[in-house]
Image (cartoon, rainbow, N blue to C red; front, top):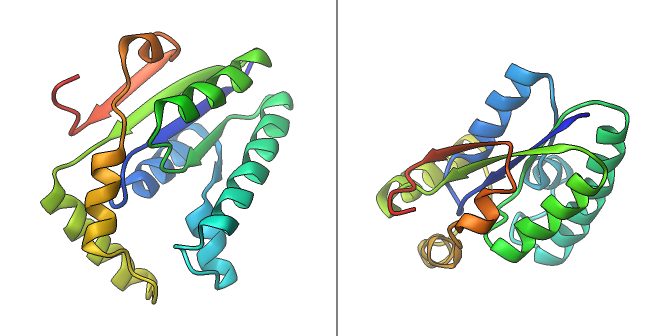
Length: 160
């Protein structure tokens, strides 16, 4: 049985940093649309390509899990319905799911996005309104969802 690490949070929450840390600590395969898009020269705001990549990465993740290796995904997974669907698919194959929720305050998000985009030399920067929207649209996990995880890690998630 393998472990699927689901990292969730708004734009700039530190998902990539956390996902890299998990991958390093667990030898999990890291799947990140941002990294694939950046390496391919595709604008990070291209939602059509992002959706396609996430669908492909989920198929790859299920294949990797079936071979007994752990996987960590670095997606936004803002919505509970999306997370519950992913959890259902992963657990149907007999795997465990660990959840990681990152929701820092808006000022931290703004700072982290500026640092990331400067370091990556990203031309299609996230706008302040996109960052605010991502924070406002992030759905905190509820008790029914939390019961689905083997382990849960929170950062900046006061109020659960």
